[in-house]
Amino acid sequence: MNKSDYILIAFLGIIIIALFGFLKLDKSDVNNALVYYDNDLILKIDLNTKLKEYKVKGYNGDVYIKAGDGKVKVVEEKSPLHLCSKQGYISKSYETIVCLPNKIVIKLESNDDLDVTVG
Image (cartoon, rainbow, N blue to C red; front, top):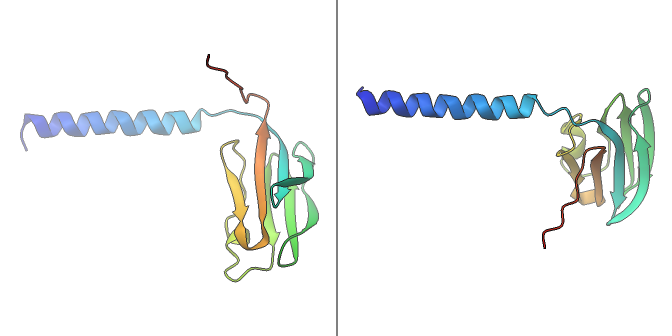
């Protein structure tokens, strides 16, 4: 290995540490989970409560959602591969659960979302 290899390894290490720090320092407080069916808001769940289960109608049948303590997940649903329920909990404002067979989308709403207008 020559000098340029060491420089490349150091540069990649710094980038990886910076990305890891950025993801770990994300302290966005998630307040609500927004549940959409076919692009229509059907349920707004307060995530600052204890864990509770909710049931919503999906395209293929009922979708059971567990939410609270700042996180949300799909517990059970009717779809061919059950990918929605295998995804597990989400708790960051940039995470989303998309259940295409049931036309259900769960997004997290945060206090620090900013709307920016560029003019």
